[in-house]
Amino acid sequence: MKHDRTILALKVVLWLGALAPGAWLVGGIFRGWLGANPAEKLTHVTGMTTLVLLLLTLTVTPVRRLTGWNPIIKLRRPLGLWAFAYALTHFTIWFAFYNVFNVGYMIADVAERPYITVGMAAFLILIPLAATSTKGWIRRLGKRWSTLHKGIYVAATLGVIHFYWLVKADTRLPLLLGACLLVLMALRARVPRPHASRAESETPVGTS
Amino acid sequence: MIIRRPADIPSSEITPESVYFDRRKFIAAAGLGAAGLAAAPAALHALGADQEQEIPARFLDMKSELGESLNSYRDVTTYNNFYEFGTGKGDPADNAGDFRPRPWTVSVTGEVNKPGDYQLEDFLSPAAMEDRVYRLRCVEAWSMVIPWRGVPLYEIINRVEPTGNAKFVEFRTIVRPEEMPGQRYSTLQWPYVEGLRLDEAMHPLTLMTTGVYGMDLPNQNGAPLRLIVPWKYGFKGVKSIVSMRFVEEMPLNTWQQENSFEYGFYANVNPQVDHPRWSQARERRLPSLFANRPTLMFNGYAEQVQQMYAGMDLERWK
Image 1: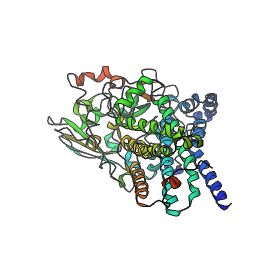
Image 2 (image 1 turned 30 degrees about the horizontal axis):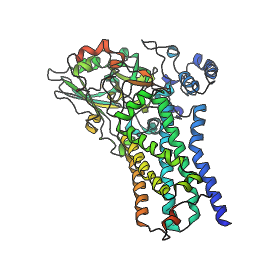
Image 3 (image 1 turned 135 degrees about the vertical axis):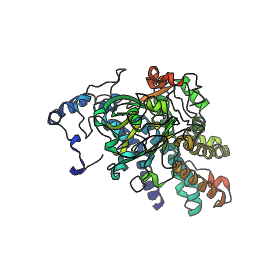
Image 4 (image 1 turned 90 degrees about the horizontal axis):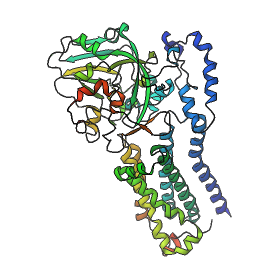
């Protein structure tokens, strides 16, 4: 079917796009193009990629509603899972290189630094979403799955705040991401769902 | 990477033949470090394997007084903050190519007997020029060890003869948005302003800096003239200085003006006083990955400078 081919093509683009920052970082570790502070570069690139992927995940539903093209929903799960993969990497790099694997340092950071507190909260929220992304969990949770997965709105918001609070003076990029998030949320609120039944339109049918 | 036209290369930067013919030794030595994922970046950077600039031979085995190895010329000149050229750490190296550091005039004003506009060449006596290996501790909790070249600031101050009313020195960076793309945005308020108490400015460790690794400062590091105050966070090291004003009142430095909750006037390196958003107890000595190095009081220069702050509440005067 034509739709299947389009989705396949989009998925190839999605996978290549999602792999690219990671490949660039791994290449940089071996070839030295991450600069004098590789730990900072690894942290910033994985964090930025997480935010971009979260925003792209949130783009799927508005695009679907605006275009009425339902197959695009099949991109939502891989986008969300890639976002989580980068969030997990971001967390691990931070724990390793900033907290030097010291749980005490990590707890102190989370407790005392608001930008880390919100970043950690965003990460913790994403864990159950990633864990319940399988067909089995979608079936088991039923309508509660949709409710649970609204957590991405909170996670993305906290993620943007995390970024905004950590920059020293140049807030243009975090503000841009925040504006994108606002537009996406506004679209969700303003553009009506294409179908009357919520269960039909918003719950992903676990096929891909 | 900076590709210079031959006409731009001063004779001081032309590699002596002896160093040039030895270059393969460095490259071979660097190759040994390439084994092992964690070790690779550190080893390559320490040896400066991929740098264009050949450094004078006297720096090859140079260490700090604590036995620390120097950061490579490449690290020093490709990773730093200089918001006038952009807020990314690589922006200064990428965007400073159009900056013209010569001719250069420094205006000395305020409470001095010999105010005036000084040509750079008249301002610095070449005879007093010396190499100084200092730790540089950024307020962002990374650090390097760098061989600067310059003149002790007190030599300059003594020549312009401060009056009895001079209690502080205020320094300003040049404003040239046409050559400094970062100044086209009001990320900070330009010009960048910094200041020192007069006794800090007169301290023998305080260096008016014109070079690094024995060569003229590259544009991205604050050419042609910048301040280095090794016991303070790096942002006190105001770059591309065009004005020195001797004043009675404490100047309002740029970062304090930007965010007085997070930055003060003194900015002495102090592991016990955290930045509101991160700990200052530890630091990452670049190019290491791990922020595991305990930060030293006054960046390791406590013995020389702590008497200047005797009785001061260092948490309040952060």
